[in-house]
Image 1: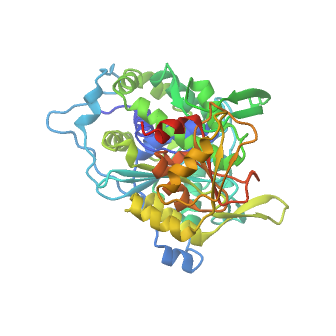
Image 2: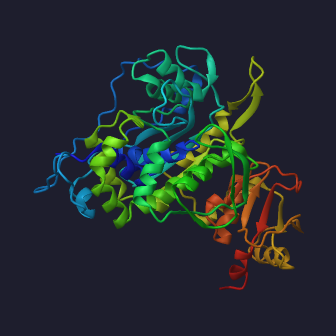
Length: 482
């Protein structure tokens, strides 16, 4: 009397957050996000205790987080997995999530093709934290080059934990060691995990979104060395602006690293893909398609994911996911503002976590007060005292000056205006943060009515200012009062 877990994974993936998805894992993550959402249980470790000293290693046999029993509402029933499921959109509504505790799920994506054996490093890692009471979700992408202490081993990049765990037969395998590594180095208790490969993503996207999924890159992407299925390379491009992509192109969009901030940008795109896929899957048609194909997908994808979530837990999570609105999903990347590049003893470039800055990021993404109002943002932006400039990225003359005047009328000081070297009339308005001024960037985004994924971490050398508003054609309705 239960629906195949793979379905829940997708539902949860859809539902939440998901998560992160490594290159192609992005999809994986998405799927995991669903599962994550569906899964449960992560609690933040006290940073006071965490930062005080080296964390005490957690015993491999630690008692796992106990998820609530999935109890059908009176009169609700589930068909056995051996019988043909009925395409009913309301099937998940028959079940409830009854545990009020916040929980966290680790989503991992590996670059593995079907039929390949061996051990793999994670190409993508993401923490999905769900608050069932407030109905909020936080997604935090972890850079694969983060230098950490692998419990029981020498320091290494965090993406090696899964490989080491599978290679050495760690209890629970690579996913369990990766989860423990996250807990001991980031101070986040991980109770559940989901690891997927490329097949999960492409199969699910083809099923629930046969017409494609919409994404909106803020800058053109040109990658002449994108890895193909045969371990060669192909040339992929994506223009700036909203566009609908099929499963193959969506995977390429989530995996490519050919942008200014490489892995950091890719992590942000993977979160965008997860949210967009969630919207599609949570639609009536997406859920119906999912349920109809559960039996075949459950069998087909069984060798493409690893999770410590049960089918019942996934089902309850899918139900919970339906109650979490998209605007309650907050995401962030551990990027250059929270890490310091260094060279390890072998001469490799790695990232060292800045724990002081990271503490604030955790509160922003997973904390109870996730949304700051305009007044709070203005006060914090004023405290940053950032130097702000406005550049025109269109062929419409005077647009930067008009934007400056509009912002000035709202008590924002603009030090200069200018023009981008190669204007692109198809590009949208973005905000570039050069020196670490998150509240200034968020305040400007709120004033201009821009989503926070329009904020970019930049170092292109176009200005010595702290923050740049790069104006696109989409700003004109705002300036004209429409």
